[in-house]
Length: 234
Image 1: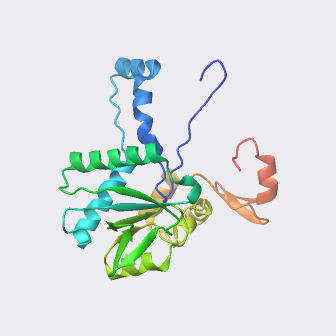
Image 2: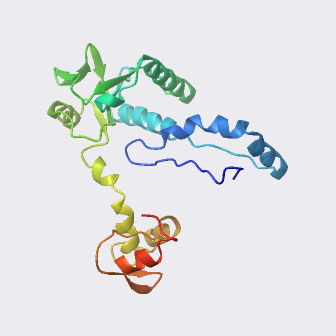
């Protein structure tokens, strides 16, 4: 909150590898004079959970335990939309991050990260997936699209591990919040799940004509949205 008003940063967390940007903000926040002074004065210790590191280690451990990676080599292909494929500098940074994760975690494997355009750069040889001459052990679908059939064949054959499938688009849809919120008290969820929804999911509804409940009160949704527009986010 400064001279130009209140400002905040939003981190988009989604099933499609969302939130990875937060790892680059940690140092910026901790180096901020106001933040560091507050932490010293209040004797607060801040820790950061890196979702990108968690993803990388999960992929490696999963591939090793499934038998896909058995010779100490773990090559990962990240399928991106054509316009989102990183440049050479970005590719080098990704490779450095991946290598650092493997070294710090002491997983006793090594390998490279490759970026593909929509999966079209991948091919199958003897039942295994390749990017050029490089054998691929894991594929991360960052494009949120259906990949070429060969990728799914290799996944079914057990020669690769595949992360994020055709359901990604559905799972990333914000209407899921409305479904959780609207049916919080239904028999679909048990008591523990209801508590999670109550503690973490804001009141959400899909905007349609009809009636709904707001904190126990039955309201006409379109009229209520208009009347309460200063308290709601569309």
